[in-house]
Image (cartoon, rainbow, N blue to C red; front, side, top):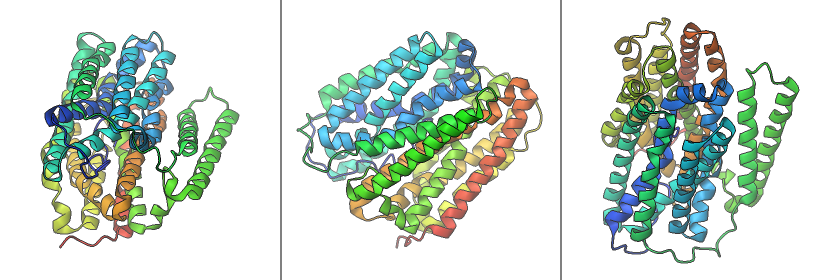
Length: 478
């Protein structure tokens, strides 16, 4: 999903047999939990702090979108390369480098004097997240024995979900008590602590596997350029002060870069960052479409809902954090129980029903037609319906990704699915300009825009359900 919660397949990235015994396994788990949590907790905090940041920098809707997307862009484009760098040069080395980059970027964000500086440092944060997120679980996988690994990853996932739930509350409290800058400052000690513990506890790297396939630098460059150009074009579409010629030019660059990326990946085959032949399998293609549409819907919601509650509902940032809390809390409490649903009813059925429930929640949100927002009537029911649908979907989705390809491609398949989910949130945020631009006309326009966006979210969730029903063909577990 977006950076507000762990993305699908986070628990399977880097899942490889243990190669070494680490004497301080508690330290390893602590460092990796702290480090990987930073990558998505920051998203929860920024979503709540966004209205304050927009007001402080006196920026328009486009500027607000880029505060989010300048971070999501490098994460979505480079997370696969981040995992490959760990394999080549050592996972501890790359994980620690990611922590340093992320923490330095966070410090700079807290001190940013203007919007341009903030956007540049948000991109630096995203680069750090792309390095540390995939390598955190790879470190767990190689630091714990097979008997210990399940419990370790379960602890990692549970603590990550808890961090995602509490982050918007603490971030909102910091915004209300001081300013949005202190919301960033809250993250800095966690990054430093993860760095110190990781340096002491994680087993020293060997020299990596530099003899393996060369890194796909060309693919990483082209997909980054393509996504950046696409996001700029989508963000600029509702802006009347930007010439249509510029939009066409950058949009064409997005298409060209994406086309070149596909050509490069096709030629590289097994050495590609994204082996395209994996999409020849109907189940993997269906799962990818499901992820794209479902997480695009969710990504838009997690940005728009705090914006609506603060600007139209008159909520404080802390109150907004508490208002959203039922969503991540429900997922944190019920996800483990949802994991067995696919064994009982089949992956195809669960991945059809789950997104359909999410669509019902979005349809409920689309009924919002009054400036007087009543939380228990207008927000809470829809939020809980969406939470239940996502809870039913996430664990089976991870299982389905791994089952849709051969064992040797399980790691790269989960990485691709993770990148798709993050890119979906990136694209969804870029399209929110059609709603946020209208919010300048008053709260009534913002409420109407939110309701319209909810209709779109419902349709996207339904498309993901249809893709699951028509394309996923996995053998049910015995």
